[in-house]
Length: 97
Image 1: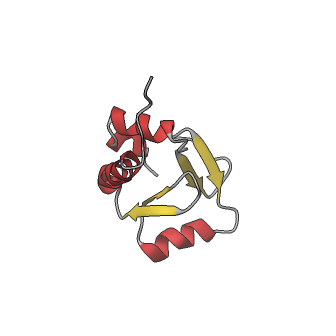
Image 2: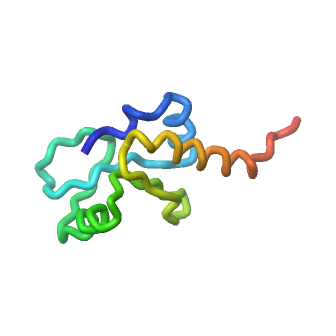
């Protein structure tokens, strides 16, 4: 799997990190090389099957663990992250002194 951070802008990465998003690679083996920050091993093949069945390459899971959306290619990921950012900004209230 490719590193999703390579297709995101610094601003998008910063936004995702600010809201607690973790970049996780789903691997079939605990001995695979880690390309991104975190790794989970798909011991029974459920994630592999999910991505195969849905045709998705990446998913964005909200901080409350609901699936926000997915993309068929990493190239589409910045659009999905931008959409999430816009939805968050509607609910962000600036602090006043």
